[in-house]
View 1 (cartoon, rainbow, N blue to C red):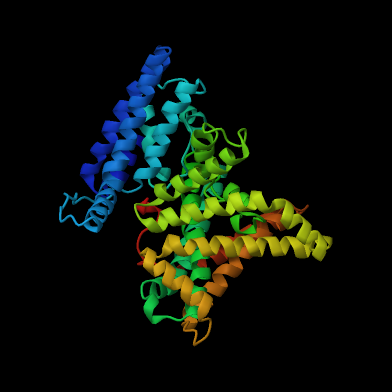
View 2 (spheres, rainbow, N blue to C red):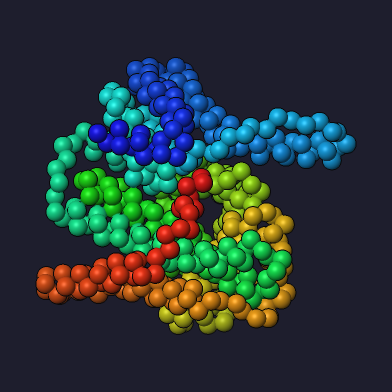
Length: 445
């Protein structure tokens, strides 16, 4: 029943694209069994077949036209007039997500950390489970495969916990993210006509927009699964409270960060190598992370920036410690922590400029205007500003609400406070929600 529901869910986008998933599911299902049954080079061969099939699907649907476009640009610069064939296809929704989830299965079977799944329907459901099929979290087989073998029954606690997560996710999406999107889209899609102050505000807004959009979806996905009795991994953990970029990436899109850590960074040697090789490993991982997000040079630069942040932080650690100590910044722990959080937010927001900009030229224009023309009128409609203020205020209250409710309050007081909180959330969704802004940002990946 879940598999049929998941197929229907995916086919709602473009029905024929279900065949792409079907082909890779069949290949990976048999690859997993053959990897487990064989030894030595044969096991490696079947793993390579599985990985190649998944990567080729990504390469054709997501990167082919990008590759052809850049080859043509290079040929033109060399004086050639050759025109190469483009593919007129739409990117399958959430392709990178379910591809990476499928790859994690065969890798874990190869490593001996997961038994090959013999039940074809259950393996297919592992890839296609509809709550997290199109935007994650990107799960590991050890966490979810066994859950599909378990008998699930409806329970009131699961329903309430899941429903709260779903409601909170919708609030983050339609009240905060989509309200912010109105302002961000107007500024970023017409950067020529906006001044540095407006673009700086739009950049700040986008930092919260993309967080609320993606974390909102993750909350809906995790909550939907919880209602049915399934547990999915946490995907966000207060990323904008991070004190360093390294910590930020341990809190943001955790399922992807840990995927790259386990399947790329550590196999490259991680930090158990020479100093310069360590820097190389970090930079390459984030460069590939940028490419994973999209076939555009803006994403490549975004990934490279984050890699550069991490490498620079490691190289400059000793010097920064000396400067902080000399200035006495570490004496006041609260102030120093706030300064670290603010600095990390500024760095991540600067990188988001390249993530959000439509083109590289737009990105550099926005950076130029922000750094050279922070003056002029600031155009913000009062209703957008009011909605953003209310939304961000509730976001902060949610953080402190969880801590407040953890204190020794009676069950009824906790229950009543929670009831009032979610009643307010539902009211805000109905009164201030934007329901025509389009899909979730990460559906395009």
